[in-house]
Image 1 (cartoon, rainbow, N blue to C red):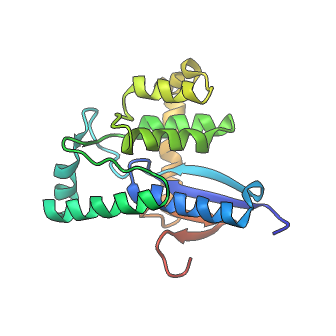
Image 2: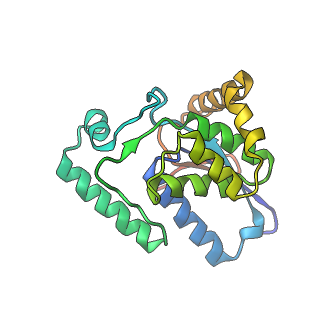
Amino acid sequence: MADRIKLDIVSDLVCPWCTIGYKRLEKAISELGVQDKIDIEWHPFELNPHMPPEGQNLKEHITEKYGSGLEDQKRSEARMAEFGAELGFNFDYFDGMRIVNTRDAHILLDYARAKGKQTELKMRLVTAFFSERKDVSDRRTLIRKLQSIGLNAEEALARLDDDDSRYAVTSKENYWQSLGVSSVPTMVFNKKKCTYGSTTC
């Protein structure tokens, strides 16, 4: 592997399979010892782009969107928790957990990319949502996570009120969808698409 590999990952931070897929990839990269040859860039995908500011109860949302009953959801959550534990990640599903809008988080991830800290912020936000019972649409949470990795929270949050920054995120979403990305995570190795779980990957 003399050349560097560009790895584009299209995902949403409230997608558990995106976290599992990345943690498995991270483990493989570490075992191969090629961390210094992989350039990762995260791209936005919103599972629920029209989610209102107050969010929605997760169980109600899953039932409405996918038709899954409570027992099926409990089995799925237990499965996620098991997979996560194997990878050193804690999925803490709890009663009253809410799914939220992730548009602002994606805007800040784009900001962090320019600062060379995109993956670090991504995992801080993912951990906040799945492990720390935090609302990742709440600006107070976003500020704390930005500051925790040494980013300028005031500068970053200014982008949330900037029309161009918001448009940039939706444009990127539209770009990937125009290429056929309809499920996440989708990983693109040197421009070759691979949807997580595909037998061709």
